[in-house]
Length: 500
Ligand code: HEM
Image (cartoon, rainbow, N blue to C red; front, side, top):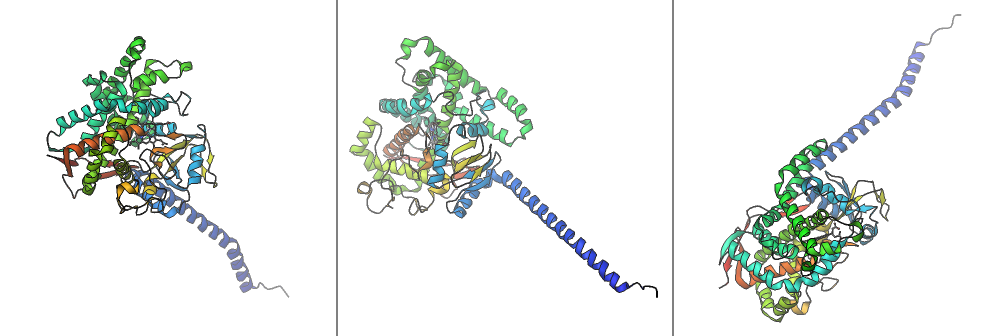
């Protein structure tokens, strides 16, 4: 008998074979498609994050900080992926990293594009290779000189307010702050004679904004076009050249008349004196150094002062105690010693906590792969930062952080009993601490902070002595966010009524 084909069995068998071989393949295919879709969505989201970062970056950092419960977190920014750390241990990792590992200068170069925006200054990525004379210049020599500057500084403030406000009037707060800060900084940096050179001071006044706007355009330009756009920009930024060559002339003059220069007490002279002797800096190199410090100095100080004036107008109840302080013995002491005024000091510190200009600090570019002590890995070329803005609004660090308390940092015997206690006790505006990252961390802290405190106190002193300030538009939004910055909104005026 011929063997018969068992068709149903065969059909079942081939069906089983198809199921066994094709199903896993189908499953793998589906898994791959799913992974591809997920990857594409993630990449797309990353691109959206990057494109929208200038507008949403600050908010994203704040939200991620709240979710992180103290752990490191990552945010994509147009320049690089940022790893943000807020716990003391991880901040200490940044503080003790070597200059070859994490670089402030490389991150600053990415942001400011100085080779195009600062008259061609292409500084070294590693801090310290070309000396750090600027730290002694600002931290020691300028700070020690502050009390001697007081008559000159008071004269500048008086003249600027007379010209911009008069007996009373409504003026743009940022423009006024920039004017007065530029004049005082000019006096501290270049000396009394150079500030009389109007063309030079006009260029110095505009230089910061030219750098900021120029760098912003280059950051928005596709990378392959940056060299061409940058070269064109350098050509157009004529004020940078006026400022640069003005500084070169000033420095050459100082170097030629060495004897006379010994009488100069200003930043230009101290940069000449502290320049690394073994590197034989040219006048141009010294001029670049002054330009870089000038940029760091004027913009941040003018914006911080603007916010302090805003807060004085927003919280008018502080005017009376602050005025009593300047009219008492603390006021006279400040005019002689250039420091003090504990209530004013606390008010300025609270103002910086309330409205910090920068949301991140200790920004560093990893020059090589870097691993934090908790194992968080940062690839070469990426950035690390500290989320300063969210930390300053954290109840765990600042009790009732969502309330403005102008005297929270003052000793309670001077401030009264109704203020919120800081767990660590009273502190000064210029103090450095683990929680107060406003001035930086570790070996890189702001050497200009004593100058900042001195200038802000003098301007506030003058306002309290002479005016009753208030916001012209009380309901308006006075600030705006761009990237990680908080800036004064355009057109915000303060009404200065004569105190009578
Ligand atoms: C309110 C205004 C200011 C704030 C909030 C501020 C803040 C800072 C911070 C946070 C750093 C450290 C940078 C980092 O780690 O990322 C720094 C560095 C620096 N600041 Fe300021 N600063 C201000 C004004 C000034 C002024 C007025 C000057 C000059 C007179 C100045 C000169 C410098 C210099 C030269 C450095 C670099 C220090 C170094 O590399 O060792 N700053 N500043």
